[in-house]
Image 1 (cartoon, rainbow, N blue to C red):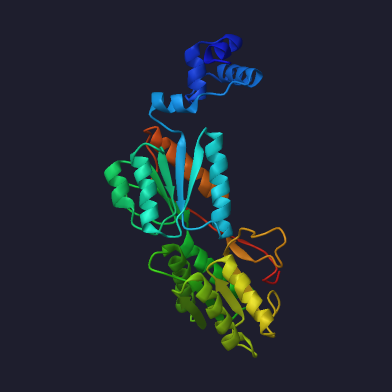
Image 2 (tube, rainbow, N blue to C red):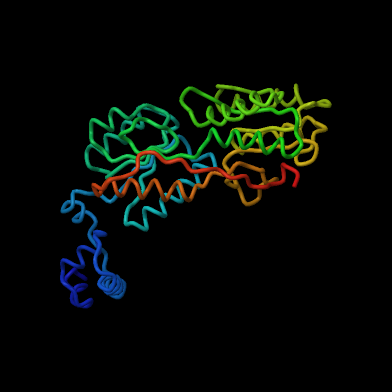
Length: 329
């Protein structure tokens, strides 16, 4: 059985240097390279349990999120897992379905030293429990307080930019579609940005503003399309709070044989900019969130928290428009 002493001997360094490399403590680059090569040559596998006992760390991070169903959440999870793995951490996924009690179970795991920190996309108020336990945590999308680092995109400005872009495309009467709730503040911000721009510039608009569950909301979109778009409609530009909602709308336009054609007589802009599937029927024009940047920033902030370093507590990334097939070029 290969031991840490074997690695140290082959690399020509001390046992302590090997231990530092394994535990992601900074050493001189040439030493790190020698140790990593020796580990590879010998096929050495560090004892993770022993490492956790010695360092009082598990090198595991919990990610709490409402669902992996939406492409944005799926990509964010993937990017965070890769970034954590690069830093020597494993990811424990909590697909909470917005279940407050399930989320608290994962907070309890952190309190029991089963995870080193939490990356959180939750619309429940778990902040008091996190504060009481003194757990490193980074909040994505929801701002809790000045003591928990927060990272998101500028959702309000994204709504403003969507309205501006629709006007640039020649649209004069706009519509908003979004599934909103008191818990999901980011969707409300997107809607508020869109509405404020329309109101300030005297732009006529209508909106489907719903707090229904996912399945009922699909039916509401269908009824909305049938009512407002089946015949010759004055509404020529639509902003949806997520790309998925734009896909639902396009399905309804087709099922009702509406004369409005996305990308031609009707301009549709979504929000997220993450491709759902390789075989998507149509690429949605969208306000793109920089998922890779959000993931890297959140992981870096959490790792620095775990290490006891100073961190920035508020970060907003800008969104950008990406051209798809649902707006004219």
